Image (cartoon, rainbow, N blue to C red; front, side):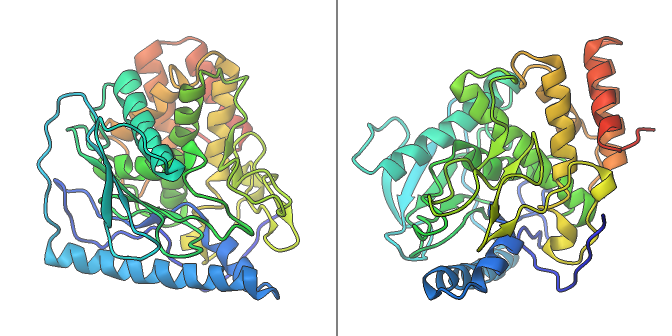
Length: 369
């Protein structure tokens, strides 16, 4: 089954300019545009209004991101000492970034649970990158991690704008507080890792790989924090984000793409699990949030076949490909799959890791060269 559509909507956009040592600045949101588009058409103004305002705010922030890049963003010196440098700001339901500082590195938790969750999520992401992959922050050189909470009113998204994280509180009807799922925090921060490494073009299959990499490591951050094995993990992205009235469990499922939600307002999760159902569309930058289900499922299959902690072997292979220098900005699924097979062989030899990775791509219909 192949779906088609027009009218592209950009959600994570590079400006074409470079900053931070050659990486392309980006604006990336966790909620896919097709979800907000569908929600904005709801008959209930309490549902449609926040979605429309979110889409408008996202468009404005993308424009501001481009202007900031052209004018030149101020660089913050970092010390690569293997310790996080976190700062949480409160926008107080406004839109000026970063807002008022409410918690710095090493300071005790306050009464605001949203602030505390953001602080913990930044720390969990930093810890996995450092402990599992010896990467000092998202740039590998101790980049400070900044986040703004309570952004705008009824804002139904969270985003990485190339420099910091921003979290909305949700509208309470469809989406809850965006700091609740730790994998949402990790997902967006890993867009920063991709920005500083492979810098995958955000369109079509390269864009779907960009999204998938963030889902993979977002899930691994959650699993690492919970101490879960691959068999114990739920493999859901954004579990806990959807309000009780929504018929669904998360934004996406890596275990069963296409099953995360089936709701009268949001519609049905459109993600395919294999190339048999690859979606050809002009929307969502060529379906980056949709076709990411295919490489997502491949990772799930490889990780569960290997068992144990998924960040140790399957995650290491994916990290090697993302940061190894061979992955091109325009990489297609076949290119990425081929590099994972190569990375598995180089790191682990001709053993079960190579077999698991090779079979996973075969199961989702992506060939390797």
